[in-house]
Length: 390
Length: 196
Image 1 (cartoon, each protein chain N blue to C red):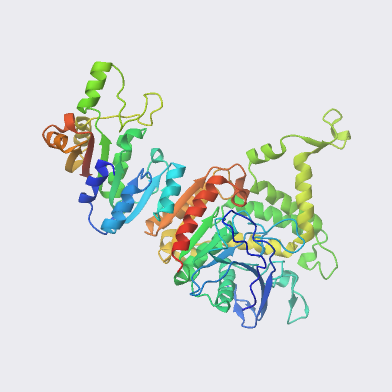
Image 2: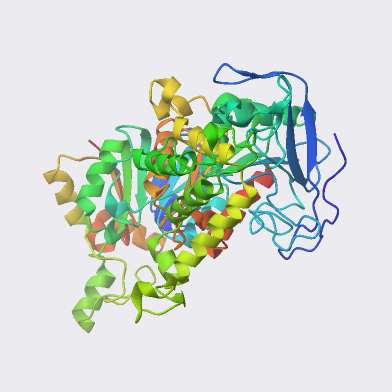
């Protein structure tokens, strides 16, 4: 195991930043057999850790990221102004308290932030994988996370926690390795996507693949990137992660430039347009198009109960951990109904489960945004997770 | 602990699977888990109570009882408890019906509106009773369907609900004695153990 990645561990009880963190990288020589049947003969994963592993290694928490997330979940990288994607909920005194837990967050395979993915070199060809990179399933991520877990000397996670696509990984953990986690925390997730969800993902993928710079996914060979497609894909996605009310509150119908008087001859630009363009631009600079396609495909194909006779109750009957499920009222991409299905199946399977439905305005994104009730109930549950650690 | 919550455990076998509807801060569930090692699940709608329950290590699901129990399977619990929530429901008879479907047996407790102090209050003051156990004014109360011991027995009779046992609990021991004789007059809270 490499050295502790947190350089600055705060000690006060008031919630605060975890400080400066440094990602770590781990190479694996052991081949990973994927759900698709293809094999990654070797691979690298990039991850961050926060807090310290206790003597009996009982306080380890795995954070699973969603579609466009990565290993940088909390704290700051040297020189960065923006913290990791879940900084509100991970850190000293926060629900996932780095003073109590040893927190591991890994960039999924197929990602574009350091773990082996489409932009990495395929050792067999000496060229970037690009769209030849194997498609991934949640269970492949779970298996690669497990390999890292073993390397870190952890036999059982105190909890596996994830939102959205991360929640799917957390549930998969509970079914694949039931003895290796004590708590499974599933936030704004579902046992499978709805047709509407798949439809939005397909629009995003089409936006990318119809960009003339896409070249069937071999754009690196052509020294270009399908920025326009990726930008559009992100804009569509972004709309679905917010709620109508949330967008209304944030942007209203305010104009950033131009005026209603002169109409379309003028450069009329709504705040919301400007925001989406900005988000799309930023994203297309830092995210890989093949990874976006790979991640949305993993979402589409996730079906928790498929191999259990399409019966979520039968699926969950394999789990041995306790569950905590959280949903948000304005989330229409992963609606509260989807979370209730998880809860109902868990109850029917006679598994310990708690569920909270959080009143929130910000749609699917609400799971990343500060919210007093969410923080309180999350804190209360994590208290219980901590009590199970020696 | 509220009197009815002290009576309920007597009717619950150790190790039972218990669903507690409107479990509040989880006081009963915790007692049942500690004393009877039950496998308990609470249903609650109040945000702070849910957080309190989770903090106590209880399993708790946020759900509005007024929307029914359709998400629970038939006979999936040994016992379904609803303590002091009946009077707050929009359609109490529907929820009782659902409880009897989901649970093999049920326990229902409710404040007895025919208790002598309520009768006296209404008779002498001509106003809706306000007491320690019903501390609300008529306009802001969550209690919208008060009933009496007699009313509940009529409901059971009309709906072919078996009363396995019943009792009333009162403020003190002298009243408990009278409650056994004249439950509808001296029972502050009624406790019914019922099944189909």
